[in-house]
Image 1 (cartoon, rainbow over the protein chains, first blue to last red):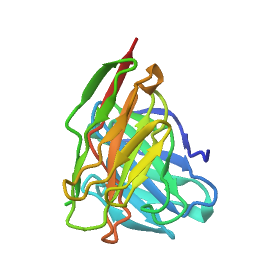
Image 2 (spheres, each protein chain N blue to C red):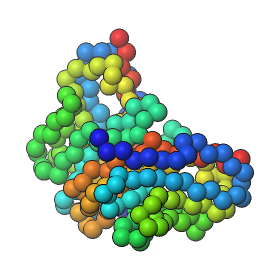
Image 3 (cartoon, rainbow over the protein chains, first blue to last red):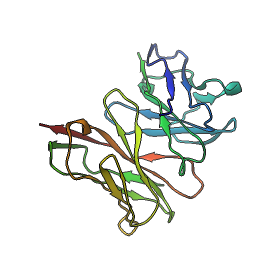
Image 4 (cartoon, rainbow over the protein chains, first blue to last red):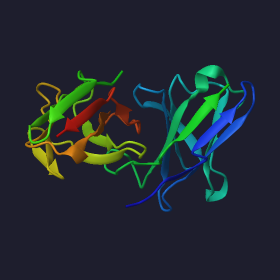
Length: 115
Length: 114
């Protein structure tokens, strides 16, 4: 089936540094998402993105977070500066159209470790 | 706000026994879409089932679920568990109130042993 690729699979950084998580969504998809999963806990919605803009964001999407997809390239999540509590697995997803009628396809996740 | 509840964090079964994973939800909107996603170890979550029709059974890969709006439930069932069913199962919701946000439950880890 359609694949969402996430690069890197694991990132280790020092607290206070900037990190960019990359997502290569399914090629013709229009909606993009980031979810955060702390070990052993549920997948929590961070943000969704359509037509170059953030549509919705949760309380977890702090001011230090930003997303973009310049010129149809990677859909990125940037955290600047990082904090210890940002350590988690971040899942990217994409869907062809409005998500209620269209399946969300998830990547394998990027495990972020903030030291 | 909208929420999804999965009461069992861990379910352990012997191969061949029936599977039932509970899912209930809360939303103020009358037309929610409900989903079951499955995540095998070191893999990404993938869609297993979805439904938006009240009282209609939906099936895929031996699993089935029926959305019951009267009880706000969407329980996942399978008649006979297989070893390969061992995975993390998430129930999820999107409401029809204009949100494009898929909301997940806490997840249920299913372990099937021989």
